[in-house]
Length: 401
Image (cartoon, rainbow, N blue to C red):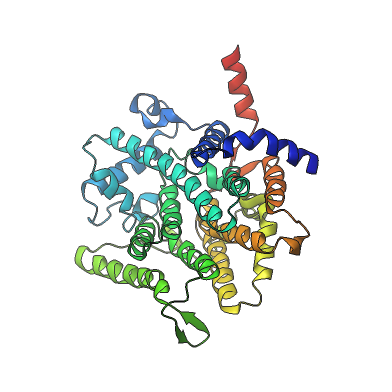
């Protein structure tokens, strides 16, 4: 394996040299994600979408998003069982598109899709920026970004022609930890929370990463069991601000999100509805594939930091429980992606715990293993295989012929 790593290091070295090395790596990661997820671009155009069997389902979601763009704070009028009825407090993507000088439905949907693509590019840049900040190692930073590219996380930005907009929430979460401006951290977190409520748990994991990496000891103030500084305030206030704003919107605009069995949101809904256990297990395992190993190892490594461990573990477990309580299991657990970001940081700081002297070598082993492991997204009661080789090879063969 070490010989393969050295060959890769030599082959990849042109991509991590020069002033624009991050952008070169982003191009590689983005092209890989697009080629291996094969987005259905035709679904963003009425003439081709209208010929598909899922036309009505897509159109309902598009119309709900368009209505939200027109009136972001209007009470939702869609049936409680639909995904569209859950959009009330997910209005940030709608506000972003509303700011653009476009007005017809399909142009707006195309703009939303482009925003998701841009979010993917931003996320890869952020991953390299925060990794290089502590490692000062370009190869390791690039490998961290590529590790996310070969997971569902990387595909979620580019194959999402359904426009769930999770990628936009991921971008805001990563921007909040990338910036060093406290006000921007606060605003980015709020934007993530109002893109999707599940980002609240991602926000806790962002705070965990911050607590592990923050070296600033200015203005310390001790509270029971935990040390709080002025740098903690943007994270804490973002949760408080979200609660206040959400309650205010509910009172002033009668906005709400339906929950309960009929709405498709109920405790352990998937298990109670009889979804196969093996399908649920497959979804959880293939979400991070072999990356579950460093994630679980990092939890063990945090055993001496009890409060931080409790926050990280409880957020991860909460997302797993929520994923089993809604229809889209994969899209829910992926909001825990910061656990892997944290795992890379802990591994870099303590590589000898795994008997690997070079952090970049460890990141390459994980990349190689996950590259060979198919990505599977489980939504509702079917498996959406985002293939590495089948569609790509067949499409490339047809193009060559």
